[in-house]
Length: 357
Length: 223
Image (cartoon, rainbow over the protein chains, first blue to last red):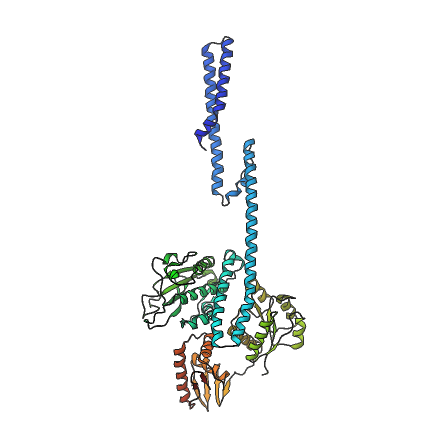
């Protein structure tokens, strides 16, 4: 509270007091009091007036500062009107009433928007489930009639499916806790599933896939992890190196290891890599960077979703370019300064491990 | 062993007929009752070995059907659905489903699940083996036998031979072979396939099977 303003607001009150003082002085003079007595009374009056105002200013300031402090501490500040006590002063009660009214109308508005959003999200989820029926039918048709033509179609269907999944997970990523089953899963199995999901994409682009055999298990949600891997594989294919100068074919390598209480899954490719300047921002929403601008079909959504899901699943996510390897051995010894490595690190839950042992 | 009967409960007619084609092509007999009819009765009547059950059906949901069927039969049930929420997956396990596959499914994964479930439920002790022109392939122990002589096979070689034996007498294109290998988690390319085929031919020659795998120019391989 501004003290100076508080005193300024008291000016009419002081003026009234001065008027009263004058009136009293006249009366006392008229009834024959000595000037000393009048002066004494006026001085005492003034002193009491200033003292009272100073004390009430201090008290009021303390009270209001406390209220301000509480408001700042609140997570949802709009709820202050419900938190504060009913103030004793009449004006303050009106202000509180006003606060409550505005709070109520805002909450109603928010609820309306939330309802709309939920409706929209449910519609999107519904739509995605429905679009999956024709995709399934098309896949079956293609697989039952295998020709070079249907193989092209299958690759396109894979892509369609990946984009629909992306939309589904985008819609769901806000409410992960609803859709979350953490179980012990074998990393290798999930990788193989993700590779199978992108089979035609990988085969058409002549990608070499190398999955190191490993029995390492992690605690995570299988469906979400598979989605993350799908996005990463699609990126590795999209940003592959196509120049015929390089003798080695484009490749993806999966490596798993246990280190410092984490299980690390690294996915390396020998593609075009990521410029050092872009590296810190690749997980940002809508960021496409130099690579994205030079190629079509970059939305800046895939990696953003990966980071968001990893945050919710508490999986560490880091990107390195050129490709690196934890075990000291380069993933692509014949092309040491190329490619990208994405590392997912899963925390080993010591409690669960101990219980199991 | 008579062919296994698989019942498909699916409301989309195209998916139903295509699933039928797929499963028939892989040596299963299929039953496709009308999804609006009484499925539990149909299961009782026709005694399928396995049930492919959609969760979203026009009449009764797949979940309630499953619990109904579980009251009188323990046959393996695979849930097939397009809504892949974890609640559904959990429900399907709680209600006694044996597997849960989401649409759009990879046919290789679907077939592998069906095969594994049938094997587990109706296990017949003897080892499965494939025979063609006197050569006997034992997939379980990864061996090829011919006139008393044996050759040990690697994982890649075995998968290639299994595919060729299953399509014995027919021409298998290189891309179909590569497709099959990818479905079995062996990610080989064209060159690697040639290398593997050559290695198999050497092993076959060593046990007296010369020119067993024939190359058809521009078409593929055949045995």
